[in-house]
Image 1 (spheres, rainbow, N blue to C red):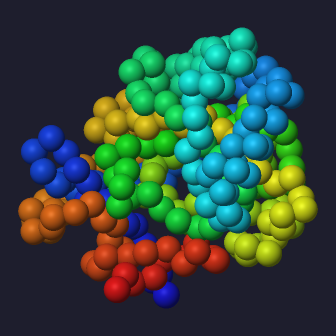
Image 2: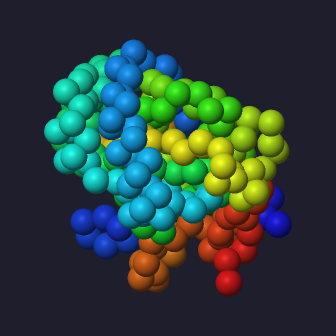
Length: 239
């Protein structure tokens, strides 16, 4: 097991791989959002059951265009999220960032720094409270999931969706006969934007020498490439 030490992201930048710290801040709040119509929720449930084949621990992308068409108040969610990000100093960053609709039935501990190291995630949860939390084991934060929860965090920060009464992720906590799916909107905000970096406490180019020798995005802890234990969220040596 790795000790809980500062980690380094090596991420894709315009001129090749660049190094940065992993932001330790997780910003969150609860904003006023409309209730999704029953037919939209039923459509989401059908999609996860018959198309994405959502399994416990997985996070999958959902069709967004159909939801926007069938939910007249969808844009109210986007406007509320834009207002929240402006309130934390991000100005118009959200408006120019890619948005996706996602689903999960719990989520095993993971980081996304080997695919999205150049981004921060900004999420808006659309489901009602089902007794689940987003857990960030290295910051100590557990955020109860309910409709309107908004959060901003570094993609390289280990996280999971677990039951509120659990201390870690276990697939058996998410049986087929319980409605434990969560749906949320997510935006990828550019980590190199000075406003995003400042909000998360990210600094750049602390290990340019190593970045110059690598050919793929990755996260290092204590001088070596690292992965995340899917059950506990603790860092392990990769390989």
